Length: 239
Image 1 (tube, rainbow, N blue to C red):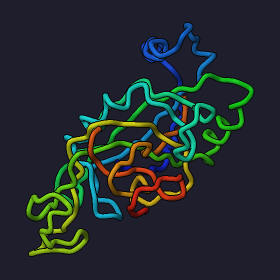
Image 2 (image 1 turned 45 degrees about the horizontal axis):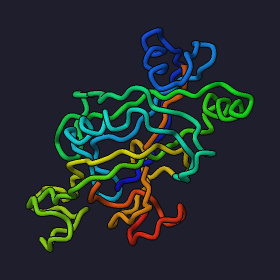
Image 3 (image 1 turned 135 degrees about the vertical axis):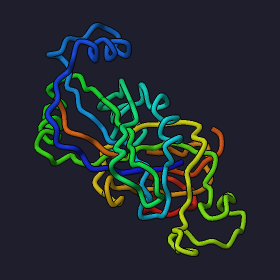
Image 4 (image 1 turned 60 degrees about the horizontal axis):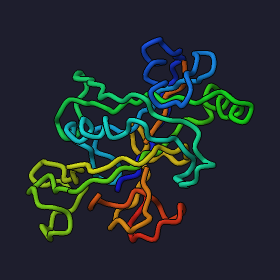
């Protein structure tokens, strides 16, 4: 499972009629544009991060539909009381003019999320609008972490060290074959150079949870996406 933390993009966005129809596929009663607050979320990208790992474009494309309907919570605390938002659309955004450290065109996973406006979340909305809530972390599970040098899976003993350069080529772990997406969380600690990342890797225990970034308004197998501070007992590391 992977936990990624990303910075908010400062864009004021409203809700279109098409988006309202998508939102209402998740609501129990029809909601109006005046009842909802909508914002965009930068979940993760395909750049090599500070832990020398990356989501290739294929993984981002596979993750997009997995995040539909997933909740936005706080600090990866899996409690119904912490549910604050819900993702209603997700797509991969291509920026071909930019090249990643891995040598391919840059892309990132953008989601649109909504909240129902209430007295209780008025402060949260103000903090998003004011740029205070600028980071989120997403949780997902992947089957494979693959060495970029030799193609062996992490832990297979290939001997290559992520972050080292071999014959002019950077070694990193490619996060492949996603099996599930869990949630995105408002968090405080950015770590990825562009989007910010926090994650812990390990074997997924029965109750392990996982978690990416926000833009301002308008399985089996895998590695653990939850850090020790969130209460995960899985051995791993955090960024």
